[in-house]
Length: 302
Length: 302
Image (tube, rainbow over all chains, first blue to last red; front, side, top):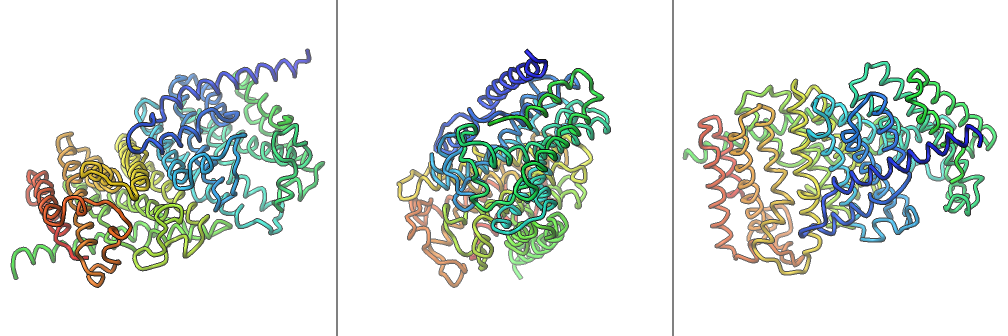
């Protein structure tokens, strides 16, 4: 077995373990469907539980591990960012937005429930994400909790994820430059990935330069991740990805792949990946999985 | 001039002064419409600025005044709750929810912009409300900031405002008991009013029993406010209220007025108002405006 393959196996088992841990945390942190509002609570659970690779949760847990943060505290922060991510998917899928009927192979939330319930479930998931961060169980130091709330809000708000989604909606059918696309994607998906990598440093009360290294790692990882995603859409087959191949091109969506071409986009992703790995070099062996994650992200086939 | 009339004039001038203060704070705290996301930022400002009586902001400023809180800090918290309130109105007005084309006499946000922009503007207003609370300028003590975030989230989330809106949507056309209606309204509008009254005590690091008195005041005030609103809808003329009279009855909406009748509802509101005023009796003269507000709320004609 090549060293790379062995590494990728240990990464996949770590990702599976962390996905299970965050699932348990979410089970506890999302209210049980009871009372007149049970339908709302059921929709929140439907949108959040049992889904995805939990990339953001993985970043929180791994970055927290660098500073010896209590895993229970880190799991709350990991669950919180997955709630925030789930809210964004529920709202992005709405008919007025990207109008997607499927999410992770299941009916999207407004299809499984209805539009009003999906809007409210997204709203309440965002609320719960911030509530979990602010609660004393997340960290004994209230300064750390406030910093997490402010950093997540910065990543998610009008100058972050929501702003990116707005630009994306306005861009449909328009020609964007490579720089414009890069900014759109940095806002829409990059900021939350950056926050996730930074969160461990906030939890660990790490010195500013270490927090900045993790932020830079998350920024480059997020950008590489997005190009890899666009490459998969452009060159992956429907069979490999489980999604309709060529969907972006069919929808007239500008991506870095459509603007730069496959080869240059591939080189760009490789360069970003190398940069990302470099940012966490100084953490040594304890950041090995963060470096393997970079390689996984740019080489994955689905 | 009767003492009551004099009191009501000083209340109205205090309300106007505070509305102007919170407007200035909102002007500063809402980002200027710049960059590719300018449309989103413009929608956030459209939904929030220049509107309403600012009841929630008034409660924050008055309760903070009881404890000598710096008015600049209190104004940030007041602005934050108005952003949260504005977000809830934007989403409630959406076609999939209450489908209202007008709000405060202007086109609602999805009419002035479009549905996608309105969804995103509501989302980003909620985010910004929490961000403002978590930022150091809101209070030198991070514990106070975390408590504000957690209390606002509790009031706004699935077991609060969002839950109330869910129950309200499910209740349309169904018969509810007086108790069910009271719970629905306590969640949908009461919790945020209660939070607003409590916020001053959190900012002022007040002892628990004073925080509880203000919470109880806010709870009873919110309930009285809701019945008064329903009475206005049932017996006010369109001319007096500026809204279509009898809209609730026409929509088949159960209110305490429709279940209890006008006279019993009026007595219930008066009883709640008396209770609310009683909770802040122990604060003496400094709570005079809070007591006058109660009288204003149940006697207003628009």
